[in-house]
Image (cartoon, rainbow, N blue to C red; front, side, top):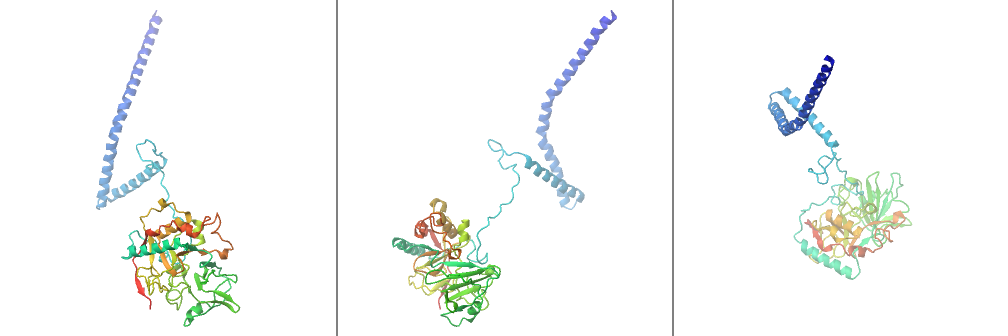
Length: 424
């Protein structure tokens, strides 16, 4: 009997204990959310309070008190920053419908790498190579002069006489030669009183197979990167007695030169050196084969025009052969640019035309010479043995230069402020 009564009592005790334990568990679970909610609601204030205390210590340290505390604050701040950076790399970005911008928790990006542009002759600070500021001052005569020039272009287009891009005629072949290229003497003809130019031509690393550009100017450039020297020739020809040229120049430190001839170009050089009539080097402003290959012209352009102003030139030109008496004609050395506010993308230009327009907008166009028609100057491909300009897959895309330049926005050119000089 005793055992019979004792067993239910044990069971009753166990049942009561189970109920108590179950009740405690339910209470704990029911109170868990409120406790977390309270902690969450107060967490910002708690962190802010701690941060305020830390800042107070750091401010005190900055004023010269609690130096040890100041160092401790700096250390904790640095560690906290590192922790935040570490966490930020691991968190995903909220893109669609998220409360935070997509880039808030993105991994830090490496700084952008500047694109490698084509090689450029002359100093990075040369007028050929410096990009123009958007607010570059215009010449007071800009609108009138550009208006007259635009009319000249329209007349040439109607007469089917340009504009042109000179490539294999009245162009500039560039012979890049190695350090061990044998030298020859190029005799200066048709000029006197230029002993220093002749001395610069006494040993020119001119290849025996060199050919000047077709046309009466017969221009040619020799470029020797190993010595940082350049020679340029006008009316160059090979005769039975050797090479000779009518005029030209030489530059002994090309990478730091301005690209306009003067005393700094070569020992004894003068401002009358140079194959162009303006004394601007014919290597400057040249649309090179490398420009075309990379699809980017990162320098100013050179242009020749029919009606260059007589008796007056603009810096950086040093002289002129202009003969136009029209007061609104462009002087040699004039610096044109396309309006920086012109949206070139909206014009849907051919690829090469767009390249030229972009260069004209960013660097400008210098009037370098007088010519029979308006013409840009591109590198003569004769030294390569090929002609990459022509054909359906050439740089001209099967079009003529006149067709390519028909859509060039000539009327949007601007004339930058000129520093004029009278031809003596």
